Amino acid sequence: MGGSAPIILAIPYTLMVTVGAFLIGFVIAIPLMFMRGSKFVPFRLVAQGFIDIARGIPPIVWLFFIYFGLPGIGVLLDPLEAAIIGLGIISAGYLAEIFRGGLVAVHKGQFEASHALGLGGWTMFTKVIAPQALRAMLPGLATYFIGLVKDSSIASVIGVTEMVFAASTYARRSPEGILLFFIAAIVYMALSIPMGLAARGMEARMRKAGAR
Image (tube, rainbow, N blue to C red; front, top):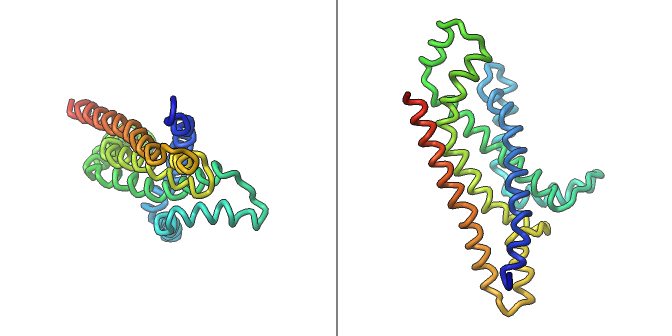
């Protein structure tokens, strides 16, 4: 593998940070979405506060707070865990707004028609609303996930051995230097471009299915 070996070996860590943070964000974002649209004002305020804080604090501050700050109250995390949790919190804020935007995009008439047909709340959501909302959400979800692949590089600041950490570490010892960063950039593109193409293909298929 030559000079590319450190980068190739670091790919699993980049993917673990990305997928782990996205899943944590996804799970937290679902209740946030419902709370954000709730008629109960305290729920709305809590959800909006969480979203604003998650998105308003720079990622590097989140990672430093979780990795260096939490040990002060007895919570010890390794760099990978801290990175996944920190980026997961940030992801929750962004994904909650993407989810809410998808629901808002569903025409009000769909809700009215579902009620007129006597569909229960769960049936209406899973059979009528969610499929249409997902079509509206998909571009935003794909764009965010691809951005998260690149943003995972911030985990290098707390010692996660993802691609940027590997490139910077080995560049200091190797005459290949800048080549390692070039290889890392190529790998990021190799990960991101197919994801974007797959998302566009899925979106097109969902649109065709919805038009039938």
